[in-house]
Length: 319
Length: 317
Image 1 (cartoon, rainbow over the protein chains, first blue to last red):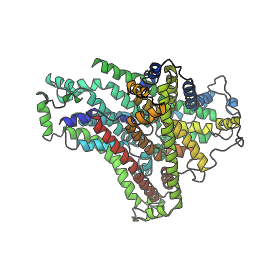
Image 2: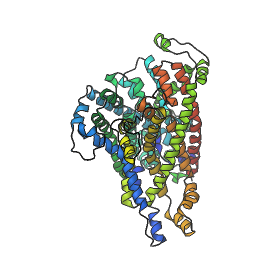
Image 3: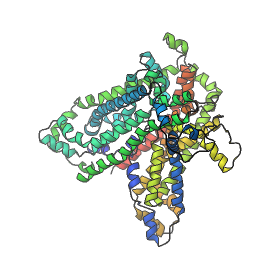
Image 4: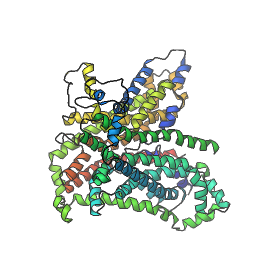
């Protein structure tokens, strides 16, 4: 029985890495801040030889290349039209907010925002609730079919949803559930479910079993031990997991493309791709729309780096 | 978590576990919602996809809601279609080019991250995270702007470098050119994942190993090939298969960029399935294409699966 216990403990290198959109590994955060473990130190000890400068120069050049499209999106959104539509790009400009006014002034803009927020929050909360139960069973309980369930969750993480959009459309149509926010919420919930289970299973398994057992000695039932001991310790894990779910649902495009074509039921990604078609050459407004769509995701990334890794580190020190 | 190996269950928990082992329904109640949701949405879709691929399913059947079985007709039609074979070849070529570029550039940048001083590393990491964090749909929109015919920065850059013919160059004028832009996008968006994860994995390797190799007179290239490479082999294998799967099924990047056009010349298999279905109302054909795509994907996935399972086993002490 101890083998099954151990199988729970160490997850895969990155549990949440499956879907194409949610950029998973939390390791981006610590990686950025961690002091260099190799290269530099070894070079210094190897001798007083001066290190060449080209790696630093190359790294800065690469940084510029990678950040450029993001920078250009924000820069364009703040330029006036005469500075956007030029043969040679304008590098220095005084910012204007006119494009944001244009983009938010579009008919139904706030409907799209509300739809996106509703669907995303609904899917993430539903996934957390359902996954919490399932991952507790997978991490802590011994039952027949447990290994099979783990395999199903792993396989479902890799489900090629993009290839199933046609049949999803036909299914929703048969149920007369096209252009419904409920349908989209349920679909996103199921899309987020496998990696939510997978991540939470890892987090639950990381809570020492002795804590739970001592709570049960003190008279807690299984449920009481879960809610009073495990659940509070899971907060950083729940946070990280729900943020990955948020990114997945917020960015999703292929499903909403077939399921919710009607303007009233569309979400922001669909609006963004149509915006460009409808506005033709108004690149300033299009980039303002892109920027507004991107900012929440960038914020989530920042939170993921600071708070979640911080919370986990704090827990580790205390434990 | 491994502390309990071989330890007897403590007396307090023994009754609880005993009770569970004798066929308690608690675990099944807990996993039931997840299982039902997966079965109803994902499982049913997979099964029905296969069923529809054996049906005559066009606009008429869609409206009359009738089922007409057609045997292997859809598959025969697809396999005789020249368009299917060129889309397949295109998908494989697109996948190969992307994965090679992603892995090579990602590895080089990951190694570079370990060589530069702290401040520079922070700057590069932030730039990589910014590229990584961008939502795909926003990225596609930005790339359409970067590669705009009249006012795009790409044409300006080409002119500045001194290349002729980029005055009003239309980057979306042919399938190959469209897919080149998509490749730049996919590589730009995927390299950060490989680079940052490789760097994070490398930091877990102690500096002693490098020192030892260096003392023995090994060059940087030699250290990578003979020391780092073999140690990181599981990482490289798993990441490569992940990228293969991701790029092969990439839909949004290709479709949102140019709708598979011009003249369906930039169609990859997932995009072709979508266009046959939603564009041409050939749902049976679309389902057949999607089943065939799934079968190809399953090969890559089974390799990935085996690697993960093996790693999980080896990860146990």
